[in-house]
Length: 351
Image 1: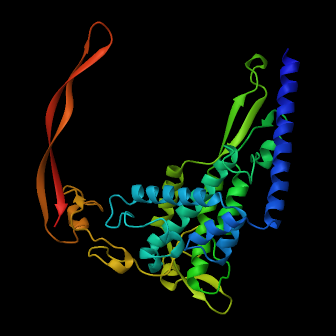
Image 2 (image 1 turned 135 degrees about the vertical axis):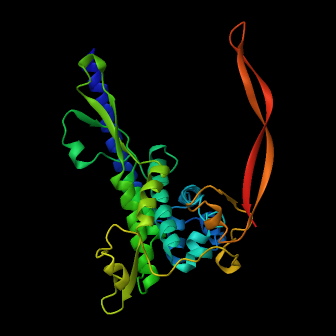
Image 3 (image 1 turned 180 degrees about the horizontal axis):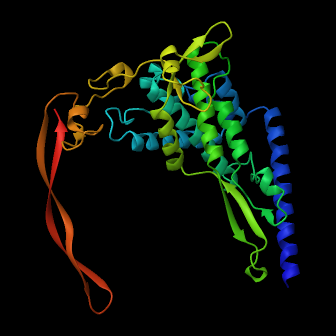
């Protein structure tokens, strides 16, 4: 019985491998075929596509929605990371990531974070879509080389990290690197995608508990967007200012950053313009200012009223909200009954 069970598992794994080969053949055929009139019309409606992105849209039209979702997930995580700061990422629209509008024109530390988190998120969304069969252009991923050499581990349908990284780079990275801005953008994209690779996890299930879990079916899965955001936040806090060497067309550490001990740019977020103070509104950069933002009068950090309000006064309001209270179990089991109480909450906002 156990031998038959193992035989069926091996057959299923062979099927997954053949399925991946089939996906590779379909992908090569897709790159050689002409897009349909409907596909061309669909891509023509997306005004922010450049020439290279338009070609990819013709080949992978279904991927546009996945890329959009990846960018939106990244901006949600951006808001989570910056929620206690003057700039909280709330004014940034997902299409501005591609048109480089708003604050992204500034090429500051905030721009570096957004570039890295969006590249990472798009890569992860595509990698997962390959597993859930939401796209016909890719199949399952594979284990790492170290795991493949373990005879006790069999490969399951893993997130297709390689295809996710490939398509995210093809769609999002600048192609002709002729200036400082494009070089920095590609550098930060690479850093974001490397964070995903370095934080992938191996998830395993026992093939059979009867055999003492000696054989396992394992797969590699991408990390959560929150995990990637936390790792990139650490890099954001230690981001490095760079300059563009026009002779060899390479990024170099600025003199000030070099004096602080930052000699290497590899693996770090880089920028080349000073951040705004974000205190006052600036419509051209999409900065809303901090008037009306909630602050914490007892905090000395970024969310404190002294920092958040930029030295301006703040006003205090007492808000009342209804909450459940005095909850208790009512017999016969098991119904919980609660009273409704008014809870006073003190809120400070910047003027």
